[in-house]
Image 1 (tube, one colour):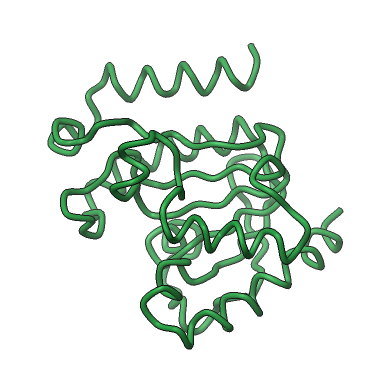
Image 2 (cartoon, one colour):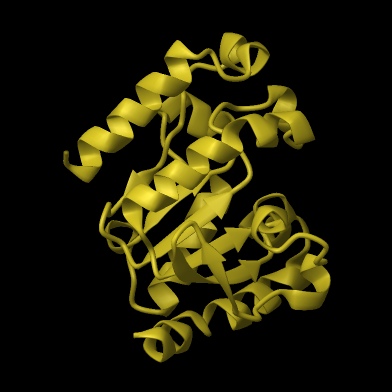
Length: 191
């Protein structure tokens, strides 16, 4: 079974099991993810926003444009990486995903990652970081790679602030860029 067909089956399972029915009822699209299914790097955000919900793709709004800029600084493009979120439906009014929504989608994210098998998981914001690095504060560990066992293999987690944070707080932009510039070195060290 190809990775593409495995991900399609996973998407069908989320729909057929009616995961987070309240979110599903008000969403336009289930936003699974996008990019290279053989990517060494997977980015995980928190949940789709308005543009993502309308287009059915992750990180296509203003935060996505900034993510594209950051990818370019390390000579990468979207086609080189895979991008997804923990929660696959847009929360109303772009509110933070609720703990029970993240918990409901976590097994599907784990299966998604086991299909893709990345070497590095870059968490964008605290919502995705806390599942891999519980008890940690993003303000204390952003930009610091951590090796963990995930499923049956080891993976490096690189926690970053969410790109949207830089849109609201100009001072965060440089921090995020500086952290992002570590990506090639981290990848090189684990090969």
